[in-house]
Amino acid sequence: MDIVLYTTITILTFVGMEFVAWAAHKYLMHGALWIWHEDHHNPHLNEGRFFEKNDLFFLVFAIPSATCYIVGLSTPSVFGLTFVGIGISIYGLVYFLIHDVYIHRRFKWFNQLDSKYSRAILRAHGTHHAKNTKEDCESFGLLLVDGKYFQKRTAWKQ
Image 1 (cartoon, rainbow, N blue to C red):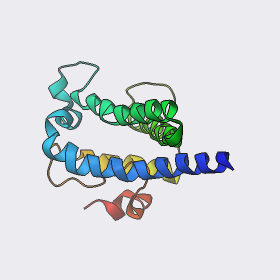
Image 2: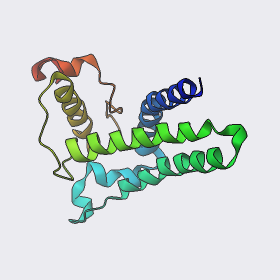
Image 3: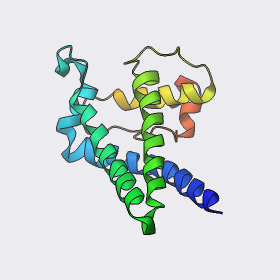
Image 4: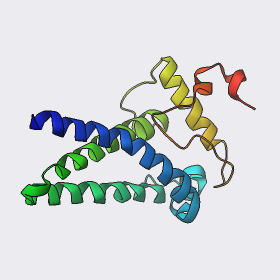
C-alpha cells in the first residue's frame, strides 16, 4: 500500500511542478528576477559564456527538492516528503532534457524529434522567445502546450 501512496505523491508532485514552473516563469522570471532571466532571452548578454545567469534557477528548484529529501529521510513521521523531493527532481530532469538539451541544444545529445507534440513544444517556446523583454510574452509552461501550437504555423502566428 505504501508504494501506491509514494508513487501517487511522486506523480502528483511532478504534475504540480509544471504549474509551479509556469507561475515562477511568468511572475518571478519575468518579474522581480528578470535580472537572472534576461540573458536567456538575450544571449548576446552572455558574451560567449556557456553558463547563463538564468541557470541560477536550477538552485531555486534544487534547494526545495534537496530539503524534501533531507527532512523526509531523516524524519520518519514525514517520510512521504522524500517523494515530493523525488517528484521535483524528476521534473527538473525532464525540464533540463527538454528545455536545455532538446529546445536550446546546449548539449547535442540527441537529434530533433518529429512528432506533433515535439513540434508544438518548439513552436510555443519559439513564440515565448520572440520577445526579448520581460513584457508581452506568452507560453510560460513547458510540458502543457496550448492547442494552437499543434496547428500549422500560419494558424497561430499573429
